[in-house]
Amino acid sequence: AENDWGYSGENGPSTWTEKFPEARGARQSPVDIDTSRISSGGSAPLLKFRYSVNHPRSVVNPGYCWRVDENGYESELRGGPLGQDVYKLQQWHCHWGAVNGEGSEHTVDGRSFSGELHLVHWNTTKYNSFQEAAGQPDGLAVLGVLLMVGSKHDELDKVIRLLPFITHKNDKVTLSDPLDPVKLLPSQYAYWTYPGSLTTPPCTESVTWILFKQPVQVSADQLASMRKLKCGEASCGTEAMEVLHNYRPTLPLGNRELRDYGS
Ligand code: SG7
Ligand code: ZN
Image 1 (cartoon, rainbow, N blue to C red):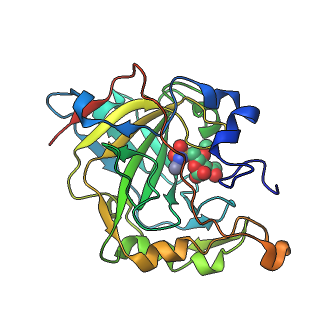
Image 2: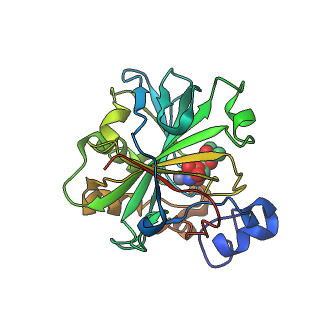
């Protein structure tokens, strides 16, 4: 295989544990949100976002998704389940499926959505770099947004319009248009939260997951554009395969607490 991990038969999620032992752990993500076993969090601690809108971002094809890098600009998340710590937006990216109706990483009462957007933040109160934070149990906070097929998402389209320019692995373009990450979130901020992991190798158990209950809509065309990205470099020519799907199946919640905030 040309990548050491991926989503195909030879290098897919069931093989990750061979090279990445942490993927066998008891705090793995994603999970199914079983709404019958949620502990209510009571009054909702509000999430607070202070995101920068007007700065250049990079849109990258790492070979297994599309990713937007914030390039160090100050964008902060705090509140909710995060205590007093401040978390800084590092990057955001997407997971999708080969067909509509699958593609989300988290499922809700066994139901999949057509995709899932992840906004990855790191704890700047306690750690000095993203790399350092990514290895700590309270190092990362990822906001998850479930995507369903519906109308075109205008803010996300600023990125999707650029995907034809990053077809191959390691391709990268600059997005200079202003973009407001808050517009990627649903209008209601009710969420589920639990302690988990990165959903890709090395599957480090460093993530406080915050999954919004309300899905957002993207168009079928927007999802189709994502499936055209390829997992190989341009030098692979027509041999490079498309990233038709890139979601990890759910893993057991075990004895972790899943909390519910807002309704
Ligand atoms: C995506 O998800 C990428 C990864 C990310 C991974 O594959 O965005 O990031 C890079 C740098 O390619 O891994 C360390 C990291 O952020 C896992 O993130 S996720 O758990 O939110 N899905
Ligand atoms: Zn992700």
